[in-house]
Length: 184
Image (tube, rainbow, N blue to C red; front, side, top):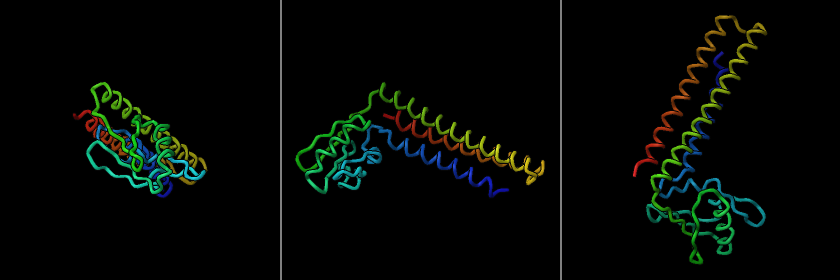
């Protein structure tokens, strides 16, 4: 019985991992190279992750520096950054690209906090949908005669525990990230 539920538990964990990735892409006034994770650059006709076309470093707390391995990639990297939704204009000195993160004002912090809550709510909905799918699968096993009524009750109880833990984890992550954003 636990084997069938393991699949749904893993799906819930994937939803939590996805939420973590979304949170990493939200900038908190400090340079965080993870905001570049989803940016892809046109590298000789192939969309390639930014990390694979240059060296990314953080020389100061609010600056990300990108040193392309090929100088002619600077324009393509700038274009990819401008087309992304990170909201920072790149500057270059001919050999490196710099992204300077401004201090967040109160209004922007509140917008980011709303975005964090939205991501967390989407993750909770995904977890609840997975629980619903698991409950449907449990009921089908009972209908097919593979589960007794007691098995079904235990499986539903176990699935609810897994769901509650996932929602609790999401709430904690949301709280930590919101606190991080709201801290000046």
